[in-house]
Length: 316
Image 1 (spheres, rainbow, N blue to C red):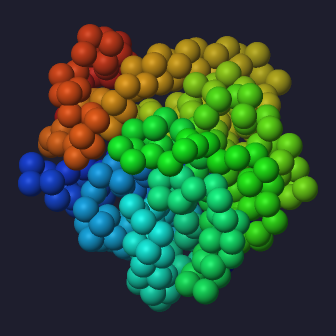
Image 2 (image 1 turned 135 degrees about the vertical axis):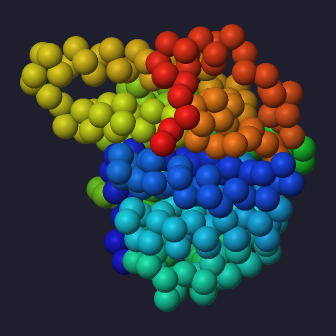
C-alpha cells in the first residue's frame, strides 16, 4: 500500500444519477474512462461535488465499492466514508475495508473524511486513533467550512482548529489535508504540519490553487469538464517550465479555468451535470443535494462558457 497519495490533480468526480435517484453506472464508467488518463487520483463520493453526503448511505457504499472495481487500480482512489454520526462513519470504513481487501484497489485506496460533519474538534485526535482498529488505509482530512455551514445542526466551529490539526498530524495514519477554506487559515495549517515533511496539503478550492498553487496539488470539480486543461496547469505548477510559448499557452488555459471556476462556484454539482449533459456525456441532470435543487436552469454564464469552449456535439 502506498502510504501517501500522489501529488497533482485529484478529480472530484460527479455522481451521475437517473431520474429515480440511482447511480447511472454506464455514465459513471464513461466519465471514469474520460478523466483517468489525465488525473493523478480520483475522489469518489465527495461531499459537495460527488453529493456523497446527500446519497442514502447504502447507495453511497455501493458507489464507492463499484467505482473501485471500475477503476481496477489504474489510479489511486480517495473514498469518502463520512456519514451523519461517528457510529455510521466507523461502520462505513469497516464495511469498505472488508469489501476492498481482495480487490484491485486494495493497494491504492485512501479515506477522505470530513470530520466536522459529525464530530467536534474536541477529542478529534483521540477519535482518529481508534480508526487503526477498523482499517489500515491512510486518511486524508477534508476541511470544508462552506459545506459544514450548510449542515442544519452544525457544530460550533466550521473549521478544524489549528492546534487540533497539529495534534492530528502526529497520527501517522493521517497523511494529508484538503483545505477548502481561506488562505489565511491555510498558512496557519501549513505551519502546523511542517514537522511532517511528506504530509500532503491539497487545495480544495480551485480559485485558491490558481492564485497560489499548493505544493501537493488540487482537488478539482472543473476537471470533470476540462480534464486535459486542468492536468496541464497542475503539472506546470509542480514542474515550472522555461518555455515562453508553453507558458503563454498555460496562461490562456488558466484564464479558461478561472472562468469555469467562477461558473461552478454556486451549485457545482448541478452546473457540472448540466454541462456534461449538454455535451452528451450523461443523459440527465438529476441531483440529490437539496441546496442545489434551485439551480436546474443552466444560467447565462454556463451557457456562454460551453458555447465558447466546446462544440456541444455528442461524443462518439
